[in-house]
Image (tube, rainbow, N blue to C red):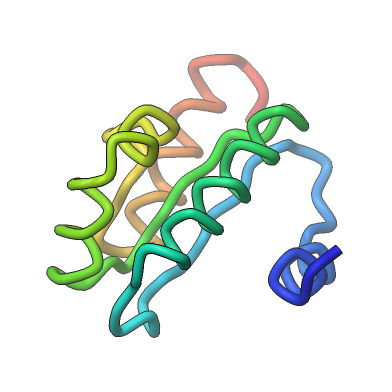
Length: 100
C-alpha cells in the first residue's frame, strides 16, 4: 500500500460506502497525480464506494475534465464546489433510498 492509500485508509471508518475526497488544498495536479487519482477512484468503485469530490480549483478541475479516464470514472453530479453541498446531496440521496 502506498502512502496516499495508507493516509486515506486511516480516515475511512464508515458504515456506508460513501467517500468524499476534499481537494480544496490541492493547488495543481500533474499527469502522474491524475493517473494515481484515477487508480484510487477505480479501486474504491470496485470496493463498492460511491465517490464524491469537492473543492477543485479552476486549474485542477480543467485538468481533470480533460482526462478521459477521470470523466469515465466520476459522475459529474458527484463533483461539488463545497463539501457541504456534497453532504446535502448525499443526505437527499439517502432519503430517497430510505436509509436516512
